Length: 548
Ligand code: TNX
Image (cartoon, rainbow, N blue to C red; front, side):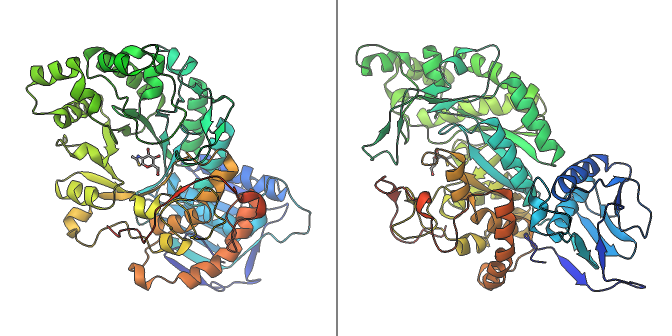
């Protein structure tokens, strides 16, 4: 069956009174979605209907080789049970989400062609062997972060990624919407954010040390209706979208649109021939950060008001990472603010800035999440941390009673190269192979069970500096995202005891599913000729990644 991610338990074989040993879907098979599972029924009918051409009419009586969906209040919220027996296929879940994950398992059981959008012919097998699967996720936060700021991914591609996430039982889409190189979400009250901030004149090809440029404009943004569609499409797939608006660093695109957001007293002196910045066209950590003024706070409160209207998620990500302090050190305005607030230094100014939005979001019933730098000045109670600079930030946060999402760059930054060989396209970071990701453990062993409860889950991050289109994103994400999904969902043993050989064997079937989905993954034998980028400079980091 080669299920990925692996379920908790599979008992195969005929159930009591079984006849043929399998449920065979035919033109007579029907689908009945019980109360509370109608949305899953609609999704399943559409997905299986496209791939098989079967109508799956509403209904289904035991014995007609159909599919029944139903809630079972005794199961946990994302837990499901899938039974295939002479009565047909029954999927029960503790909530619609559980039933949905069960439906994803059913799709895998029906074979790789179930991932296609049209039937290949009438005679293809569409059967599920008799079995019972019981399954539930290890973590409630099984995330993927996509950076659409460095390279824009048109809406269609985002919807496709939501489908790919659902197929892997991932349920949190962290949407990195703003950065130095682009502002990607329409904000009604500040139209220049997208008029000016959503495009740049040219783009560095390769890592920042590369001498190459792509001399053409790059840009794009999502309208408010695009965002509504993305959020609704995700919700139909039981995926929560967590938006990220990065402050106070990674903000040059916003400053290009509204120069007064920047530290104007120092920027003016540093820019040749004028005092305005443009949207950044290269990569790295940018010194142009937001000015700590009331105007900036009010401006971003306005941005977040619109963000809250569009995104219902409990968590809102405010970035908070990589905020160089030079401009604040030399800005008279920033220094006056430090004195006025009675702060010790620029680090405390950063934590004051984050604290402002922490309180602002809490007052509106939301919770702030930020990169682990936000821990540095002390955090308000409900805030959570994305631990990216290794495990240390996550350990400190969990010990201080904060919730944590584990996404250490040494382990699950999928922009990093997946092989040491010379053929990897634009190789950056440490080598993190499929096996490395499979052996990634989100919960650090030094946490007590009490502290470990603060680990909400884990997330893989896709930063797109060197991924200019969706084929490049696919290449970096897959197959490693499949291994990551198993880490996030399945109850795997300790890293050294994980059966990677068994996982690789299941991957042979999973590659057929990815083929059917049209995913441009990295083949196990290495990049195909057109997946290489000869002559484009990356930035490999030599030596093994520090484990923590
Ligand atoms: C660090 S992760 C960053 C990103 C880069 C990434 C490249 C984080 C919070 N900051 O801005 O894109 O490294 O791997």
